[in-house]
Image (cartoon, rainbow, N blue to C red; front, top):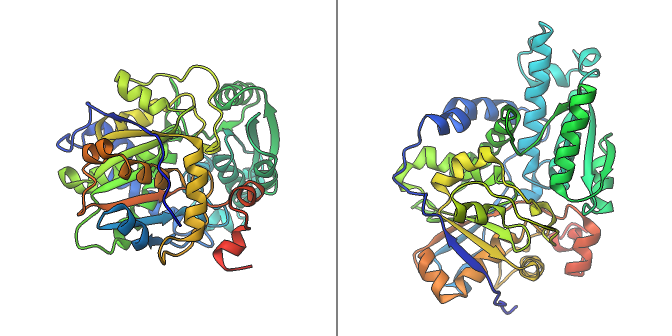
Length: 407
């Protein structure tokens, strides 16, 4: 299968530095103790297993780099995305906090799974706005821990993703406008009704829960560090943008653990929703004006999380902005497998990081700027699988099961 070339835009983050210390603020958000807590709880959930880190030797040879390894979050629990780590963990933390306020202290998630406190947890309602995957994680966790959930979907969320969320018992609320309109609406409704917002983005006066979300993502980074097969650590990380929580959680983990030896962190965004890129240019979080609708639906954010900016301003070295058609083409490439590579089921947003890597390698000036040479060892995050099977089939021409060989 021939590699296509795509247009892209590259911005260097002048605020980032490999010598920047992992200071007190970063420790407060993504410290070692917080990681230990998240790892202990998440690894106790039913069905937990590290997701695969897949070597793409064929693609690496085609792009002229030493190695590419793809973290396949399409196999995360039953939710098919990395969001199962963040949103669900934050729901657990909310439930623990509310039980503690009632002088009920649980030893761990096993107490909740044993239905020991369903009378109390049944009175707790969590809610969130979502492009799809975060809401599915929150709804799944609410069902698992015995809470109620209300999930707010904007106009751009597909019917298929709505059905997936509703399958976990969530009540669905449709909101006119885009993702950021749904964020504002859920905050208003929660304040009026006494619900608990479980958001992956922060705002003034609301940081605790998004911090928990980002802490959950560190579990993925730790899995990668244990799975990494190369003698040297990764030299480059390509990772999806969105509101920034995933990139901050993963890149921040490696910043803490590897220090000045960390790899180059490259955040990937779609053209209509480049809020992190704009923030890098401005040196502070700034919104995207107008419509941010994109094929990479779960990256359709107009505003990055200020909390994620606290991390990314120091360790997001670059931003790459790619067109929608690059993600669709890369979904097909990953499904086919290049020169013997294992076929991978990647959703619209899940393929974005690989699409950006291909685009960067095919652009001489960007390739040189990113130092993507023959010794590069690249870590690519596949943030989701086929979270909307109808869209996946329309793009790839096969079902996820046919691609994965499980049909």
